[in-house]
Image 1: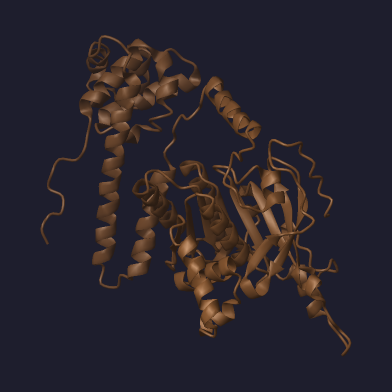
Image 2: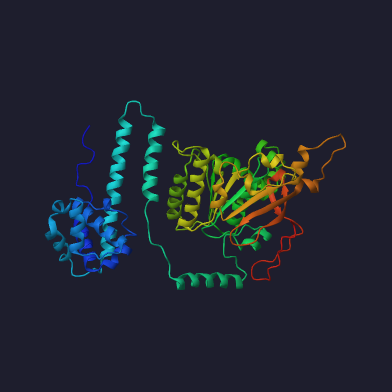
Length: 469
């Protein structure tokens, strides 16, 4: 096999020289530069690594950084002759007229280091792939971990001046005064009133036991937001795109989804369905039904999607968290789920988009004498899900619990009871917790605002007090 990389490795030796010289001229600049360069390994030349490490050691000790102190440390480490003695350190100091561009040089050095690291990672992947007993999925997971560690190991200085942040606050206030939601609307009035819309960078967990309507509610929110002009990307790891489309059509036309699935509709019903389908066919709702998706894949997919759609992405939905693939070398499933949860929070912050992730609850909720009402400790697989989430919502349908405990021939549940549903806001980092009463129409997989809903939209006096609790 021919050499797969015969070119010169990426390096910025001149930038290394100028950066070290700049620090010698202005030692205080090292603090800012150390946010870009984490350690000496980012330098291409070993002698420059040694000089940088000596500078960092002096900086941490609060000692002066100059030719003599650097030479003293290098001599103690037996590296002074290796770097070229004091003459080399003096030459660094004379290499640049000032320290003005030291941070720029640091960026160049870091960029070349990342490229070298990617080449090294690729070499490792090639070596692992050439082993006769290699397993494709295991090599892929190993390669993914190396890339993930490289991507998450970068330290950046992202502090914003207060004035810039406060100006964003006033922009949101202006929206409120004009009765406009500052976040992505859900079209559930009490929920929008409570949250002011789903906020950019928020990570939201929607959890329930199976068959409670998690996918239905998430799909309702996604479709509602799309019909209001928001761009939504829905990742379905459990159901295929066609199944979800049937649910959306069933909800929009209010036709029993069973009839649509089996084609048992009258000509008038089919005509009504076609009209509704035409009305919503251009809504910006996009479905990705890829299976075996990793958290890192979702971040990459969202970045590509956002670029492709003119930087428009207002909501990401993931159905559901525990279905996401975990790293093969994760210590246990809980650790893997925790990593995925954390990556979804990173996705929300990095792309400045709300992420709504569905999650399963464990069986404890069914064994307690609380009528099946969930609580935060019921989140399945990992307690870190609660920690990562900005909001945690639970779906509670009392009739479902009542059905499990039915007894006697006279047992009966009314239609009103069957439709009663509560969205429990169990955690809200930026607001109150409460219960929101909804109606669930199972035959058309649709949640609706409850008839008693009377909460004002932002801009009116906020009067919602959690009276449904």
